[in-house]
Image (cartoon, rainbow, N blue to C red; front, side, top):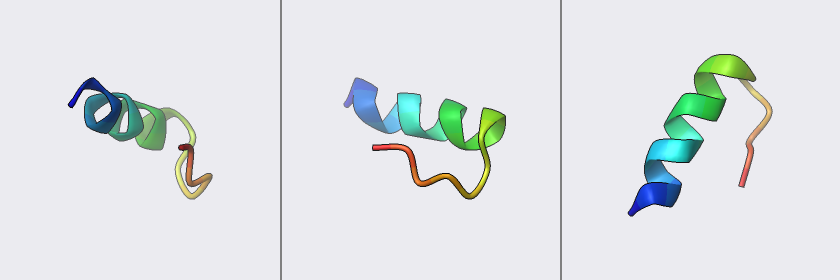
Length: 20
């Protein structure tokens, strides 16, 4: 799903934030 890719990208930009 695109959400999984978004989470992966967000994790790189905001590590440890747990973006949903």
